[in-house]
Image (cartoon, rainbow, N blue to C red; front, side, top):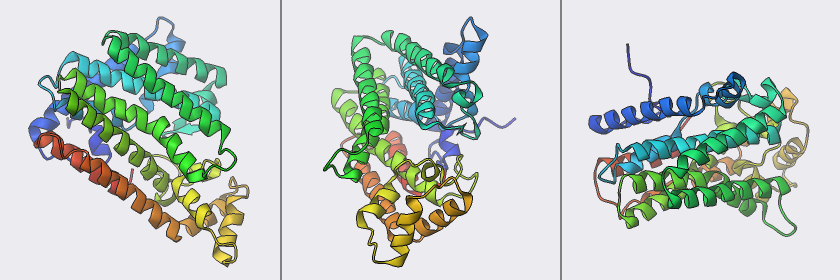
Length: 340
């Protein structure tokens, strides 16, 4: 039987070093088992609801980054490293439960969301329970880990609140969106890299470099997802193209377009009209996607992701050279070229 595909491989990422791949594969298998074990409840329904999104799959990008960052310390396979990877993934999955309620989403990774399978109350409570499990586990990692997790959680919630409130009067919509992405996505990915380095025993300066790298590459990763919502073919990326457009969620290509749109140009006027219309209509959605795919704003969004990936790569230059640094550099390339 062939080994289970790594999350990295499902992203189109190939390890250049067999020993590193072997360690990461073993670590991810430990993480996966620990995720299942930590979400078992005496009440079968609680287990079912809590695992509903988790077992549907996912890239496990955050645990992967924990394990790669741990390679910069003398104890990359320490139990604490695996525990930290479980903490960040439980936190991530918990936020997905809550996001799906707020977005009224019916599908996640091709499967029904918890709120669609049951109702909003079940989805919210399942997310709360997952946060509780993450909190219980992070407490075993010490008070500083609890402090880091609490501050990360604060940023996650703050970002969600600001997204819900929307753009304030006189505020630039694109700047507002980028700050929300940094809080909602970049913060937890930054903590993933920091935790990996910290619990593997890496020096403080290495921990800080990896935290900063995680923040930058995490933001780039989300913005690349925005582009995939426009450019991917159905089923290619794990979500239906135009999902964000259909749900009225602002994304990088759309915000860049709106900032530069010239209503005097027929093609811009038409696209503005479409974006302000009901995009639950399949024909209008298809026309909107087609127009965005050929508009210069999409290329500008791609250039922004490329620049952010380059900025993340620069943050690695002070780290020791070797296979771990090379893997993170490859991760920067992946963010730019990813199709899933």
